[in-house]
Image 1 (cartoon, rainbow, N blue to C red):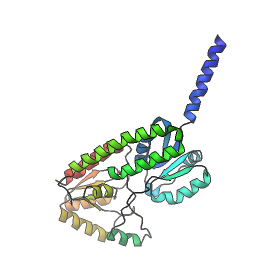
Image 2 (cartoon, rainbow, N blue to C red):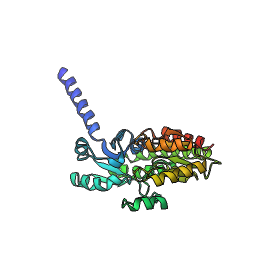
Image 3 (cartoon, rainbow, N blue to C red):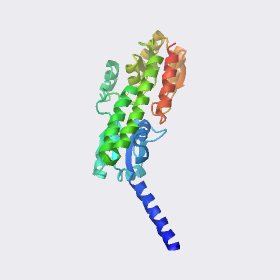
Image 4 (cartoon, rainbow, N blue to C red):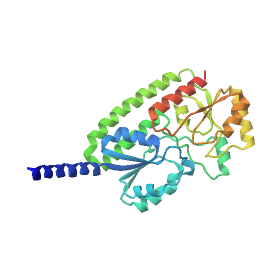
Length: 287
């Protein structure tokens, strides 16, 4: 009897280990992607993020432990961030069997404005704005790309992924309508940010994002003067700053125009809650 019980316990332990091992090991670049992937992948996936809380994507370099984990991963979801251009080829050599999926596929990217192009001429960069996740409309595309990727990597879980995606998609549609009501009557309003992380939200709801820095670079004195002048002209009351960046330039401008400085994190993991909070703050600043 004791031998039989021990055999059953051993079998149960082996099954449990097997279930854990069967989970897809997927890497994403940023925390909002992790949120999306977990909504769709559920218990079938194990999602790891490269740019962890408090780290800056503009200066990101993977840690040795992250590279070791990437060597064992099943898939990687890229989203169009600049550091991915140099990292993905390295990952492919490290783990040739890992599948790489571009979850920004099909998104209509926002190209630099004339002012940004002039600034970027000196930096040799003309990249489109990568912050596609901060709008429910673009989030729908990211989610559908993730759904298809999960199904490709794990066909046995197709029904699970489809059901989870449908539930998440309904929430995204409801959130989009909620924000449309929130911004109704505020079309054309400008809001000032330190880092341009909310341009897709602005495009969706007819707002205008004015950024202090471009491409991760602090503004020059001439740029600061232009921004201060525009902020005064538009009657800007609040400057939104991401916690990943210094508040120095934002504070100088805020003092010059009599505006408050408020935090708006474009990389928060609690994506739905954060987007509601930031959208409400932007709407309030426009009143």
